[in-house]
Image (tube, rainbow, N blue to C red):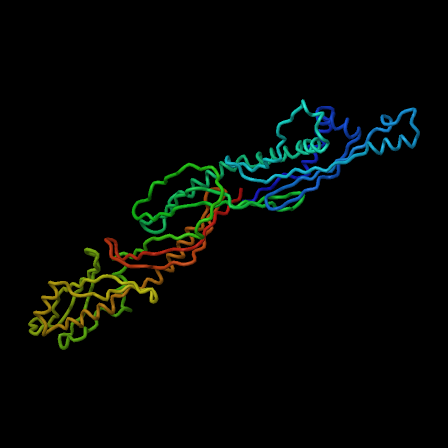
Length: 423
């Protein structure tokens, strides 16, 4: 976040205004008695380092010749008295620019502090000069707080917006639960006469992936700013890539797969072919319901006979090929018993091997699309003043399983995110 600072020349103006209005009081009276009736100063010198701002003040004073000379003194003595009345002092005030707990930017060491009027006569010239300087720097402190008085409202809007659930896919929601907001670094950019301060805020969050209906936003209250404590870099999110059974069926029925209406190996003159399949889940297993067409031994009607066989299998994900297959696919017990009875007509291994080879689900394109979609979703406005900026470095699938919905893969998402604020 970038905050434009007040013009530093305003500090000098406030000092001059004080001299015009109040020089006859307190500091002015004691300084005049000590230093002389004519007081002036060089333009303020500013030193900037990181988040520290130092105001350097060089004051000059000279006594009134008519007040320093007397009738019984020679011109040489009068000149000596005038020389003794010429003084100068150098003072400086330093303050770190920081954020208060109530979301205000301030320079706390620039404030005036308490003035002890009883002991004003006993103060040193340097102390009086510092008080005079603080008359101006205190205005800078006040100006900083005033310039940032609306930051808290904007931060609260950001805090609320970031908690709104983000729809990642059908029935999949990303919910970001923020924990705290801290300031990690601040630095002043010395661009006179219009300096600015850059602050980096860190938001600690807990991402949750919710499957089902849109979750209710938690909307925790905006906390006070804390000092930044380093944590793990970037983010790590785990979610599910879901491929419905309808989509799986569509993939396997594609003519390019070559699963349908192709003669099964070992079928001989029976010319057995799979004419249709239907995929669904049961007990964490994938069930393949296959319609098989064949020529029976005795075919009085001349038309092929039909039968239905069932195979079950568990999914295995292969990360290098980015595909899911079912290497343990086999017939269920009832189908297996039936095929044993018809061993002279069907080669069980031929049907099983064909389905093991052909029932393959490529997920590479789905992973690429999920990464693309997530990148778009995680680069979005957060209210009127902020935007979530995210880089997705990697998206990998770790395992695959069968659910009531379809084939699902556990996906890990790693990257880095920042909130760009324009306040």
